[in-house]
Amino acid sequence: MTERPTSAGFTLALIAAAAFGATTPFVQRLGHGVGMFTTAALLYAGAALFALPTRRHATIEAPVRARHLPRLASIALFGAVLAPAALAWGLQRTSGTSAGLMLNVEAPLTVVLGALLNHEHVGKRVWGALALMCVGAALLLTSHVTDSGTSLVGLVAILVATSGWALDNALTAPLASLDTSSIVLVKASLGAAASIALALAFREPRPTLASSAGLLVCGATGYGASLRLYVLAQRRLGAARTASIFSAAPFVAALVAALLGQPVRGVTLLAAVPMLLGLWLHATERHAHLHGHAEVDHEHAHSHDDGHHTHDHLELPVGSHSHPHHHDGLDHEHEHGADAHHVHTHDA
Image (cartoon, rainbow, N blue to C red; front, side, top):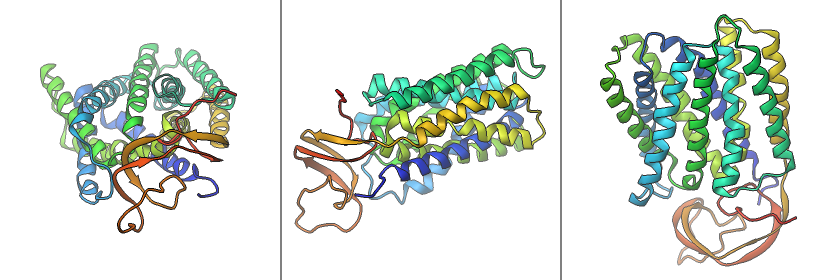
């Protein structure tokens, strides 16, 4: 047992946030004149291309099976069709800085959905952070409606995108113990295929070669690599806390947009203050108490030095490996996140 088992999850979520946030202003520029479904198709085609070589090396992970496909199809619908299309449409009607910070609404929405759908524990500290980020989002929404580069309908479209990704996050969390490369590949392939069909149905214009290449690169980085890291973080932290760390993404987007020459208003910086405070509250949370583990049978990558996997082998494997295994009931106390082994009630 490491001193702080959630550290790796925080690091993975932050890197995922940086990869996604850095691509948002470029998606805005490269998507100019490109249909929203075409943009979504290119982004997730890039994500699928990223997943292909990484999947060949994921031999120790639990495989994606046929029973997982209905959930993956729902994830693709909300996260790889609806959300990126709404983002692409909204980015053409708002400034990069405003859109980047508006994306922060994804975090509180995911916290709520993680608690409702996955029964993750959300304590006072997390709810306090949630309230701070909502204040920041409200300041941003009310202060940028009169901005010449921002319209209310554009910000609403960004809100639709964040809602789609929040639902995507909550639906993905139960699959986080599976091979992450396969999750990225299936989700991205389904999303790209559906978006291509919609782009053809709506007769969207064909993008230029430069726009296509740029959006494919953004997709590989901000949607393929970022998603894989995000799912790995969810495996350690759960949906709610991973999303709270991922809330750094909009600030990266705003920073990159500013570096690209977009103006930053004073109220935008004011809106960033409560959002950053909320992120700090999430990042500094520590959670440890006496808890029980019920008997369970499941499959995921694991090692035998983590204090939870004590089952026998004819020949004990070295390092991480995956196979169906059984857990006996266990009561103990240690610091933990909301991973697959620590979804339990908190009566006190």
